Image (tube, rainbow, N blue to C red; front, side, top):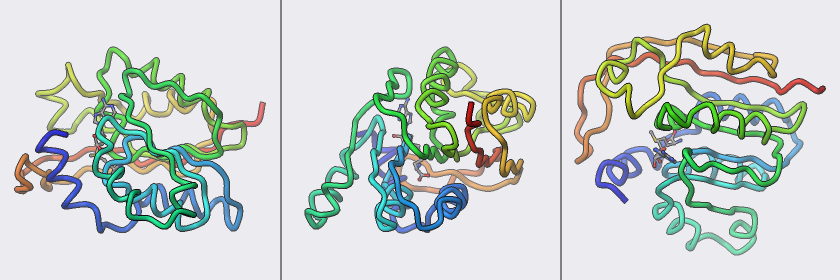
Length: 203
Ligand SMILES: C[S@@+](CC[C@H](N)C(=O)[O-])C[C@H]1O[C@@H](n2cnc3c(N)ncnc32)[C@H](O)[C@@H]1O
């Protein structure tokens, strides 16, 4: 695992669940199902759904951190948490799921593979199921320097991605803040993101 992600996991491991993940969970009320966490990182959102009784499949290119957390869990929880090391560029969703969450992760997909990955996500969400996650906007600092490696969208493009979904929430946010450097240091960064919660149409 790269130093960069290791520092990020240590910084974020005790965070509360992402806003979009919390809204998605709320939409299901007491009902539990199968959730797929794409780019699970330290597992904050995956463990939140697990604590609510959901079955969780956590996917990331770097799974060592969450693998180690799982080892320490009671067996009943381990049985409900599957972890799969897979890149977004190779994403294959074998079984449709009730809910897909993807926070601050999908934009790390190489733009040449993004559409293919997104098709998997749309097909992998049950009709009536929920997608919730974050996209990076085209005004983000990284859009200037990392267009070859990471994927950025305009508001219109995000709406187009969600053509098969009813948008429940879509919030555009821009602010000057920081991101996590390789050693956990704070690096100034202009953020531009879209937080999205959407329900797949029942066709
Ligand atoms: C910014 S972190 C977000 C983690 C978590 N969702 C959160 O909100 O804290 C992005 C995650 O995406 C993963 N990632 C980055 N590029 C990836 C790729 N091409 N395929 C799969 N995972 C990737 C990283 O390993 C990292 O865990």
